[in-house]
Length: 106
Image (tube, rainbow, N blue to C red; front, side):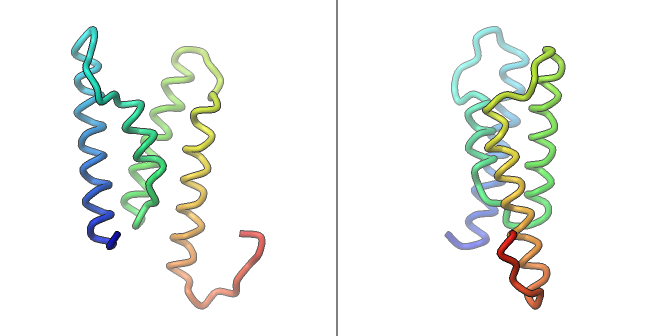
């Protein structure tokens, strides 16, 4: 997938997430797609740039806030979100620093 196609897919999924979240807040029994499903799909997508990484960080923060609001510890559902963000940070850092020495620790 080209970088531009990936950006468009990410942006479309972000819009779908916001639509679903709005619908869930307004309706008692909202119809699919559900925001949680869309968030999982979005978080699994690689971030192509810092803006997309920022979106993923905000979604992660929202999900953590929801857990805290209900007095729950972050559950196993959020671990892959964190791992995805971590992967994106490493990839984007390597893109920004192409002459940096390779590190097997990353």
